[in-house]
Length: 284
Image 1 (cartoon, helix red, strand yellow):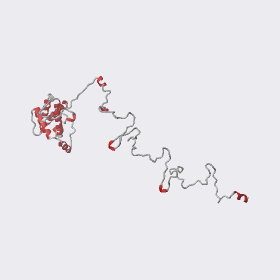
Image 2: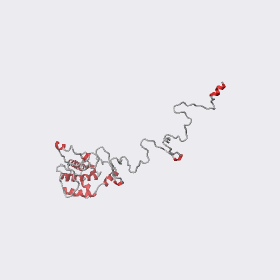
Image 3: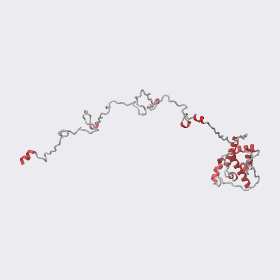
Image 4: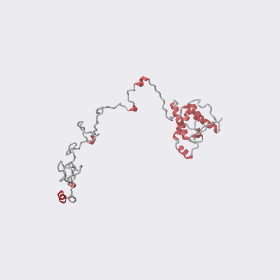
């Protein structure tokens, strides 16, 4: 009878990758697994740990101790394909025992020395699963798997939580509105470390809008009035309220002398080019 098995993820790996995988192998974990397997099966493993497991016989006996009847037929033949078949049956059995796919190794990982680290991890996971199922030993290997707990609640019980803010939305367990301003009003920010005094009344400008702690309106014009801009470097000083400010231009030098009143016609006359009216009459 022949056994067909798929090529695992470590099949055909380069020597560099296999060396990196070998570096992750833990000798201390190997010693713990050696004692655990001996306690479960009563059989000692040779000094070369992986060579002692390569025929698959001890592995099949191990899973049969943990779950009787997992492997019905164990091949004791020296033929390689019988050895590979034993390993393949063990791999199938530990998957049925409850190990997750990423914890299980391929037959080539052990028989062709492709990835002993994965084999070691699978045996540790198997020991943890056995402990979870109640198979306890003196040698503590592996960790307990978390048991799945399903809870069912009645519709009445579920409705009781409709008025409670869930943890996903935050919690109001220790929250308080003490000292907060009413909804919609401004909040005054006060920090004693900055030497700021507490707000005296609602007319104080809060920190969110700026601060008037050191500001002054002294010397400022009333709201809406014009601002006089002077420049001492050009000898411009404010005279009175009738002076046109620098923002509008300046009338410091120009004069309205001799101009016609506002709205009247303007006579353009130059005696160099125009003769007087009496001279015109005399010529005529």
